[in-house]
Amino acid sequence: MKVVILAGGLGTRISEESHLKPKPMIEIGGKPILWHIMKIYSFYGYHEFIICCGYKQHVIKEWFADYYLHNSDVTFDFTRGNEMTVHNNVAEPWRVTLVDTGLTTMTGGRVLRVRPYIGDEPFFLTYGDGVGDINIPESLAYHKAHGKLGTITTVMLDQRFGVLDITAEGRIDAFREKDVQDGGRINGGYMIFNPGIFDYLKDDQTIFEQGPMRKLAAEGQLMGYEHKGYWQCMDTAREKERLEKLWASGKAPWKIWE
Image (cartoon, rainbow, N blue to C red; front, side, top):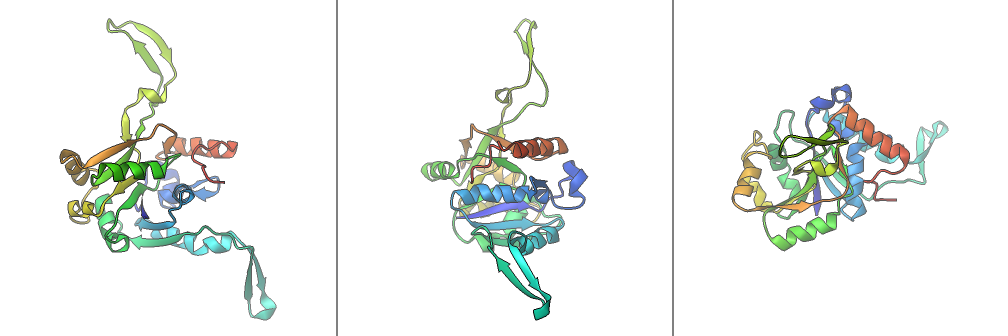
């Protein structure tokens, strides 16, 4: 199965860096968060990726063009006509297709534009800004078992502030730090769709999370795979800092690969 990653948005809520590069190219531990997401899928044996590019797409294309070179030892021999020798070349077994899906195209339109590269088969779909210790094979088994058009991985929404325990009479029993269980469940990305999803995508202005997803839900064609482990999106500078600290500590929960 192919993995489609949405990487074309502006990332305006983390504008400290996104004015220079697409949000999926913002680095955690010296590697773009896009790389981290791909490593998660690759750990489970899914190595073929279709990246939906848009805003500053050249940054993504240039990074992949140089990836092989940047991860190897290289000898440049200027005495032999600038001959280059690559030593101990290290690279993932990836096949990556980078597609210009337009600067202002909405999420559903981006998925529609990469249809020729997906083919008539189920595919994974996720956003280019969220990581987690998602059990991809388990979510796929769940998707196949229920037989509906789509599966989304649901995660707990983390509360940003302290929590008050209040009785029905209005008495405050405790003021405590937030807990992940205090939030509601949201779409954490890491989705799976059958090719029938393309019947729900009209044009570039189709917002995947609105018309198509709502229609699927209304028709009983959308199921939720409940992820109880770690998940974190990188929507703000504060969230980026949180991910950086985890990576630097050597205890990043989403690093399931060696």
